[in-house]
Image (cartoon, rainbow over all chains, first blue to last red):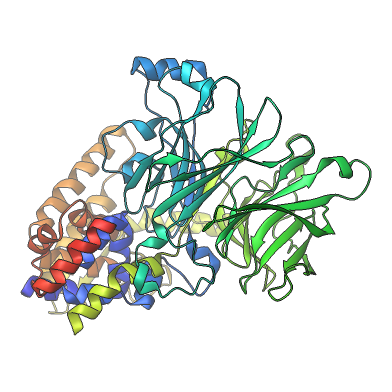
Length: 431
Length: 173
């Protein structure tokens, strides 16, 4: 038809502008399957990289934006009573898109991604995100529920998938949520070499949630796992002596080669000698838990990450340098040390006496780390190239925040996502 | 206002004042001449830079990529945004209403909408380009593939087997 040919006449630049203004991956999928020509276009990695405004192979294209909650309300009695009364103004988490993000140009609410009228996520605080899935703590509907349960929910703003977990009832005493891991359908794959065609949508499908919870009664850390398929929680397993060990680094696990990993520090020995690190590991297939002492002293702020060649690493961050220990494949007990000088991206601000500039490091894509750096902006440090690139301006609400709220980086390989989801169709239509 | 030294800024100011009454000729690819105020022409970053570089203001600007029908419509937008003030709330509301009516009319004729989009891109008229690309993007939003095909006049060329697979994928996504 004629009109179609006219749209085809628009240049690539213009088409990309239009598609990035749609602001919904779901709608773009629907557009992509209207005809063969668009299907081919939306499975062409070069075109898709343009859509994510990826200027090269950089890590930054993976960063779609940040989720954060503007209102601090967890354990805020007032907010709960407002919720119960159903008369409060709603306060869903806010999504702040990265400048090139195909998920929109300006701030939007998490609920604007979802097709549901349910108010569940209107009272939610984002905790972590992985492979497009966001984990949130939900505000209970009644004040009674606060003390005895952890109410959690996950959703994938790209696919619209939502899953509210049944409350983890820990009757009686307070329990503290120490850490968590979002597990997807493909995480049991040990080598990461599963052919993608067999699990086209599994990579971003929520399958399990792991929690490490501290029981106040005995101070120990307990491991809980939740299965999305059976909608049930496992019985708790004691995993860490809470009087001796404390979590360090991120609460959100690094999931690597079929297992979730967190870092703990031995407080007792730290008091007298060097910091000693332990790695808590939960295997996805067997739910087997182990605590292993790492053969090196810590220092700085330790953080788990994955190197560019896919090896588990611990980065100890100091003010001007970073010591990275990388586990060797053939001899897992061996960790090799490298030192990276953090490229001085911005000078310290002058007002540092009054307002201490904060740095907050996160594990990011393989071989890179994300940092909210010196009150100036969001940077990505490439551990291989040893360059630091500014990706976004300062997120003021994240820095001026004295309440220590979490800003959750939302990242995903959209190019891969589109290709995996649509390539089967494309093969079918050309055959 | 442009940055720069005080003197340069003052000179630019003076030029700007003078330019208010200056007329500029734009010529479509069919050779038809359109005379517009400089303020209107300055909506286009492409023309603005040529004028500022002291380019051929007297001879006019030939636009080999834009036809008369499209140029007339683009000028309609530039006149509204270049010649009118938008300082007060009322003035801004009037301009917003103009944009709304302008794009609603264009949206009825997709082929023409694409022409205007391409011209806005070529002439670097940021406001107009944002307006038209957003309009096309909005047409994609919240529709089923079938509705998108109808809206854009996309020819249906998928087989029943493709459809089957798409439905299957859709339940996963």
